[in-house]
Image (cartoon, rainbow, N blue to C red; front, side):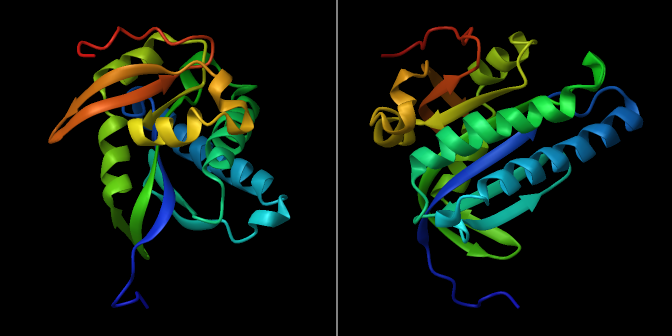
Length: 208
């Protein structure tokens, strides 16, 4: 039963969307949905081997071609980005794509932010949930991933997450190439930072 009085706690929130999931007919769409579920299962199972974070995953919701995950405050934010996204998710994508044609290859966009959020299954609410849902739709990010056809994923992090986590250098994140982009999606106006393996073909931000 949902908690009638849930409280906000600090969490790392991830939003993931499958690239191009609506094209190619029902058979392709069904394949991508199944492959997406498999990728998440593989990546999450791999990080479960780290006994420090046995209770790390606070929330998981998959809606066909998109997913929302949250990790509790006890899990270092650098671990979420460096170990889960940039390592385990990348490995899992390579695994499920190893024997499929380009037309059926699974590619994903990932957005990351952190902050106060309320988990009340099956819902999660809060500023980082809204932020990830906005920045993942940023036009420069969508274009960068679309143009990197040889890459399985791209990631965009909020300006706050970049300042607090990426620039800190934990897990070597400061050595990874992130490019700043302007985001204008619905009521959101701000900056975010994009990384696409192999190099981000991002247009420079319009405002500095």
